[in-house]
Amino acid sequence: MTAALIAASPITSIQASTDEPRQEQAAGQTGDAFYCQERRLGYWFYCVRPKPAEPDQAAPQAPSATAQLDAVTATLRELKARAIMEPSPENVTAYIRFQREQLDRASLFSDVWQRAIWQDPALDYTLERPVGTLAKRQWQDMRAAERDTVMAHLSERYGLFYFFAQTCGACEVMSPIVKSVADRWHLTVRAISTDGGPSRHFPNYTVENGQRPKMGLEPRITPALVLWDSVGKRPIPIGYGVLSADELQDRIFLLTSKEAGHDY
Image (cartoon, rainbow, N blue to C red):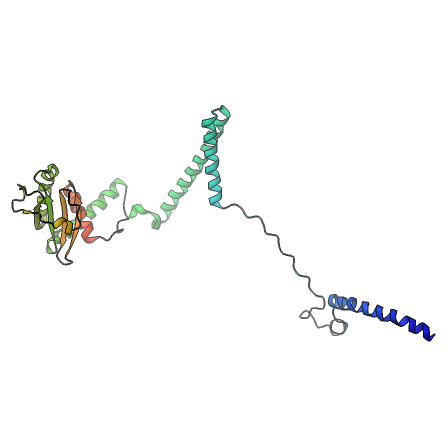
């Protein structure tokens, strides 16, 4: 009897050792009997170990709008090339049909664009620079009145350097225009002859002795006009060649009273 118990004891110990991990695993799944079954601690205690959530499979992403547009462009080019290289009725028809679809798409975009501008004044650039006949005329009248106000006080600060040449045909056209604008707004003009020849419109001229390079002007082009700022002590090039009186006044007005980008 004793021998039988002794013989059985190793088997019992082996079974006990192998049963311990199973009990621990079961306890991990069902929880402790005392805390989970008798005391019933509630939802704040995990008697059953929660299974980790399986990672969600990423949903396939739709191609971006840029990729779709690139695909449309590539398809259109391919159909066009195929129709040119192999001008069969089928290829030409396929290209025309696909091109018509894109024209319809572009027309829809243009229509929606226009409607959006109509309904949002912040998007309507024509409120700043009108294009309609009536509105444009009204804007031009206001602009001319503003320009004339600025030009009326221009002589208080600015004067003109006018570079001409006796052999310059364009100078013969530009000289009377410069004189008329200067006389209208009482601007002082210092006429400078680049070749030493006279001007019948500016008899009190002087001969050039290196003024143009100092003002940053192209030395070989005449006529040339420069506005001189007596306050800032700096030259303001206006332009080269023949300019109409209105264009000359507009340039002076913009360069002296409007910052770059103001009108755009």
